[in-house]
Amino acid sequence: MVMELYKRQQFEFLLVTAVDRYVDRLIQRNQGAETALAKLREAPQGDGIWLDQFVDALFEDFLLNNIGGACFVLQALAKQVVAAPPSGQIETVLVAMARDAFSDILRRKTEEVLEQQLSMYGGG
Picture 1: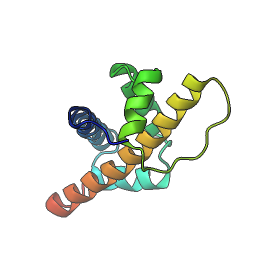
Picture 2 (picture 1 turned 45 degrees about the vertical axis):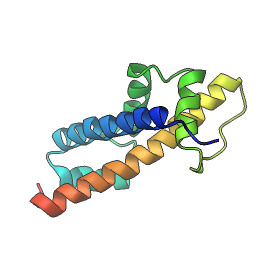
Picture 3 (picture 1 turned 180 degrees about the vertical axis):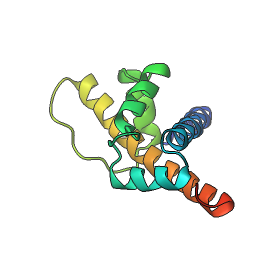
Picture 4 (picture 1 turned 90 degrees about the vertical axis):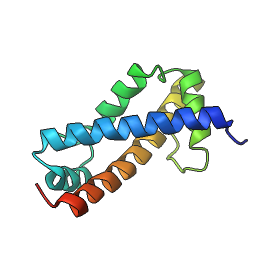
């Protein structure tokens, strides 16, 4: 099923907002884009990176930590591959899948933005 255009636009806004916030946080916590990028690639859950914690907070802030929010994210990322979550209540499984899918795209987009910043402004 193809996502309606207004929902696609809302998802793209969410993703851009998330990437901007996450990039700013990573650069501040890691004293620059170069260190942030290296640490993100090395250990996405590591000290100063905390990808899962960021996504959990984002889902909370944007009210996505429920079945409706999970379905919104999953519909936007329908072609993305995720690992099968453990079995459980449908809502719990869908939210876990949505978080995993969103974490993956957030990490990739954040890497792209950090790479762009490094190529434009150099390290540091």
